[in-house]
Length: 421
Image (tube, rainbow, N blue to C red):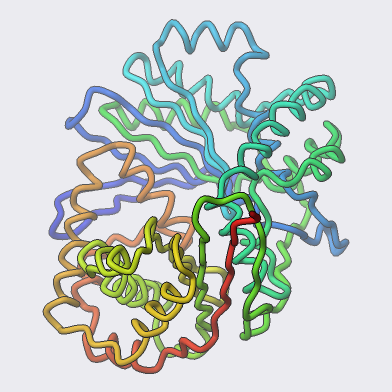
């Protein structure tokens, strides 16, 4: 078992890789009487196609989310449901574009909770009758999503931005026409292909005996290995340019809503380490549009409300999505003006780094947050970066300044949602 010690934070994680290549990460702490267990697979809604033993297979949109529903359904197992109820634990699951996560938060008998979660994820019983009944539930979710203007804005904007790489363009839930095609046999095949031990990890946080839990996990997975199928996720080569510069659509909205997406090719910064480049860009856009930037206040003076911004790393691109409700021209002019002659002081740069370090330290005060930190590290980097604090402190203001002075903000896509009346 490997010890991962975080320098200057005085925190330790333990990590082991089982014979079947499944990673298990333990965070043992006396700060809480509760525990948090999660199991993740690096498969989500953004996987649209893959090769299996050299054969190309297209994935039905919404599959990852549908599979999550069928795996984490305790209602079909009365024994498991009663145990969860008696233990007073809270099971949950979520699907994103790059990951699916199953978790339990509890305070009584970690071993029983671990057994329940392991059995749900690694021994699913996917029946056709349950798949058929699930379609009605997910159809209702899709209706609610289609009524959510922020969700509509996100996926329309992403589809306007990306020409070939659709890994962030497809709704997590899929469309009704998609889920109609899903069968139990199909879900079982996708499960076999993507719930593979070498692409999954378990995180256990709380006050527990690591050796005891480790032994339990080793016994559980004894003689359990992946098959020899070769699985490779396929992402289409993307154009550096946005697909559509400008688009208007009509919806029943009180005020017009406008979104602007800036698409940044990361190949322009090949000499900078990926993790550092992500940090520099997140610092930049937090300085430009975060809570301390006064952007929201200035927009409200122009009659623009509901300002929001989101940053995403999508394979070889970094995008920032900005949106607001009100007079479209005023919003567009304001945002474009904000990209001209950017000036961020060294003091502001260093202040943001201190906030990031504080966030890292505070993560270890909450078992849910530390699980999220661990899972994000594995998802983004393939491993846990133990020198995260030192790496943040090593960020260079001159490099940061050179990055934002060389960013091309002309590569943008604008989406307007107008009042249909």
